[in-house]
Amino acid sequence: MIKLLKQAIAYALPAAFLALPLPAMAWTHHIDCEDGAPGTLPANQKGTDAAYWGTNTLYSTEQVGTGKQSCKFSIKQGSEGWPGTGGPLEWGAIFKLPVAVNVGEELWTRVSVFLPNDFQIVSNSGMLKFIRLHTRTATTNTGCLDLLMGDKRIPLWDQLLKRDSYPPYVMSFEGRPRLTMVGTRPTDDPVLGRWETYEVYVKLDSVSVDNGGMGIVRVWKNNKLISNGTNQVAASDKTGIIDSIYLFTYWNGTAPADQYAYMDDMIITNERPANRDANGYAFIGAPIMGGKAPVPPSGVVVN
Image (cartoon, rainbow, N blue to C red; front, side):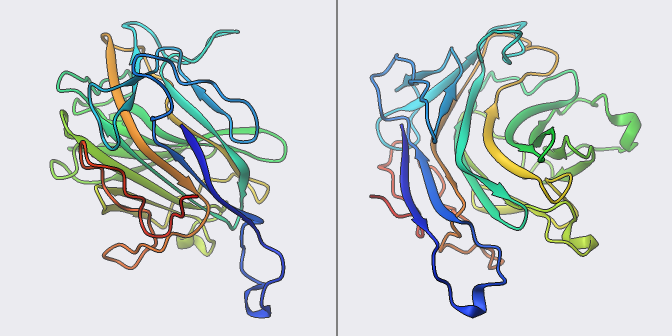
């Protein structure tokens, strides 16, 4: 289920805040996977807060993060998961933002996932698409800012990096191709057979903090900051926007076998959370504890 938990229009602001890039409408989505019977397909919703679920997605009680059930994603061996010409999405889900995030604005995305013990983090690029923030400019589609799970094998991009070891995750903005290493092995490796929580924060700009702009991307795993990407951007120019969140959706080189994964308790918001991590950075936080009742993190208001 997608719940639009809170939205507020910003009208009059004190003079001291007029120079700050505040969103015109503050909103929070909570996708809790509780709105349907186990074994049924989540409804592909239409409207401002549209969700586009893969055709193989089912509500499931097989693995539960919070509440009573989760959403189970599946993909068949040999499939890319992505819709072909006129075809449906098979693998994962797409969540359209109610209001696009513009340059100078912020976005937080947190999701908990369960990868079974036999899940294969394998692709023909050495990187499995995972959390993806879809971007555009005023004139063109600029692809996604991707957080990808890194294959433990020597990946095809070895010739580009000439590295002796490879990270558990990679960040890449398709609109301006560049690979950023995320996390360290084996400490931050994806752990199969248990729930884990990931969070991505973006301050949107076409110029990174390191180069004098505002652009930054942070990544947390289980509430631990594993990347503070002050050299990362997610916009190609000043008209850049983020309009959707993709979860999985495309398997490079096709799935090596029938695969499945579970998601639960996803929160997407453009409103700065009250929580702070160990470094003082604002984040949603609150890791999944299998089977426990959902407790929204501080700063998320449930109506």
